[in-house]
Image 1 (cartoon, rainbow, N blue to C red):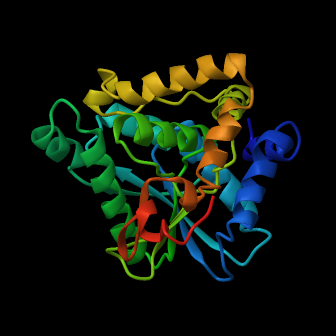
Image 2 (cartoon, one colour):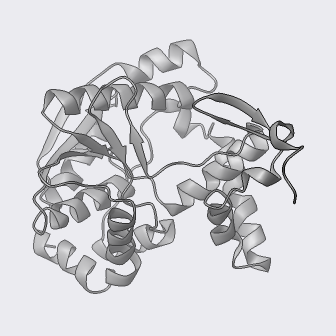
Amino acid sequence: MPVSEYERLLHTDFARTLRKPFRRAVEEYRMFAPSDHVAACISGGKDSMLLALLLRGLARELPLEISFLAMDPGYAPAHRQHIEANAERLGLPLHFFGTNILRVAGRHSPEHPCFLCAKMRRGHLYAEAQRLGCTKIALGHHYDDAIETVLMGLLYGGQVQAMLPRLHSKNYPGMELVRPLYFVREAAVSAWADACGLRFEPCGCPAAQRGTDGKRAEVKALIARLAEGNPQVEKNILNAVKTVDTRKVLGWRDGTGRHSFLDAFETDTL
């Protein structure tokens, strides 16, 4: 399939399910400014490859510069070659750089290395993107990732929090992280990959091959069961972290510290 056909699908068959929600997130969360240099971070999965194509199309309409950044955290050669082959089919000129993240994360947290691995990956992506002159990194997290994160924080972390569509970097001044697929459904990404005839490997980490990301899988299955009885469940989960009323929670934190509903109890009326 020629590169032009992959892009045509985004403007025809998948305009409603992929391109429209992508544009909605970009516009609603004001993700890009004129002359931004964006690093489209490519892990090799279907989400990040799709994101790269959508950003390339956007750069034809807006004054953006896009670099296609791929990190090798210590993959087996065959895994890296598969990523490179898919990128070539899509016409994406990858900038690949290497790290030893898989070895380090596996040594420090052999049973559950995913959290440490993700944290280290982000730091390396920021550093390499900044070295290339980028102002932002774009990651391929989608709608399903966002709602799963809300429930994981609630059920396993004891906190209400969201996967934000934009973040300022704490350690790399002037850098931002954006998630342009924030409103894109995972099923739509899978349908696009199937229509393109593309095969994507799961994460090349040995821990991922063992299926150690069990909590997210549990939450994904829970959401699917709940949605069978109430199709609004997924939408409601995300809306819950958009409409938090601090007058009706026991406590909260912000940049100034911790707060309790008792702080204003004498003056508030419900």
